[in-house]
Length: 369
Image 1 (cartoon, rainbow, N blue to C red):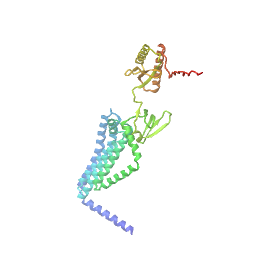
Image 2 (image 1 turned 60 degrees about the horizontal axis):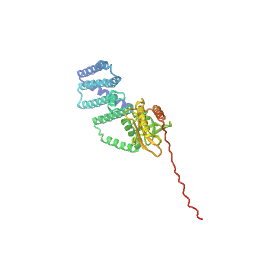
Image 3 (image 1 turned 30 degrees about the vertical axis):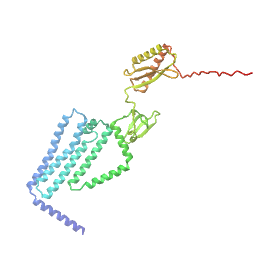
Image 4 (image 1 turned 180 degrees about the vertical axis):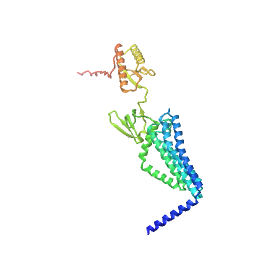
């Protein structure tokens, strides 16, 4: 029984093929074949010479232009081949229904080829991504994420355009994506919060890897920045992982970005210091700081500021030229030693906390006889 059905199917197929061959205008068929062969040759030689000229013209530029050429070359080859096949089929003068179907398929394939070319050209190493990264002043992490987002949008647009071409209603599909996205956002609220916090940190750049930062949550040197968390190595050499959602909402002090480092303290002299000695001391310390190569000349303040309980306080306020901790300590030590030398040369005494107690003996009443 099955064999009988197969024989009938084969017979009907041969009959249809025979009737089609009899109805075909052989001149049109030969013209269609010639058109298709012409586009095959056109694809081979035009692409070869055009891209050879483009590569020669961009030979002195960087690798980014080569990535665009490689991304567009294969889709353009396929585009010429599809165009030749479409024109060849239209030359056959088929039925209206067949022409409408061929036109739909051709438009869908053209959309896919163009989308394929844009998808290949929007990679993280492409010229487009590099120019966008330079314009927005973002690093490789954000550039990679933006490239993936652009590629996702390209695929979504291709699906929507092809579905519309074939008469499918995509409104329900888009609404379903919206509801699904809402449910996902609610379920992954903390993860999304950390991701957006990381995006804010990477875009605004309050700190970069290697910076010394201080926040209410952590203090140390930044070692790694991801879209979920930031790793900071504390001064006890422990690695602290802080969620980006916390860092993005806290005040951040970046000590590395200081152009100079402050020295601010009081020199306490004893009350035996005379006016002339005080004036000489203040003047010599200020001149020493002005002449010191490690002190920034912009702000140098040395002043007899106040009378304390057990000392005469001289305020010393200045900045070092360096922000490196070890170099700062060496400069501060040298300044302290030179101040000690000035104090010794002027025969001054460093005050220390003292308290003088006056004791008055109580008078005793005379004894009565």
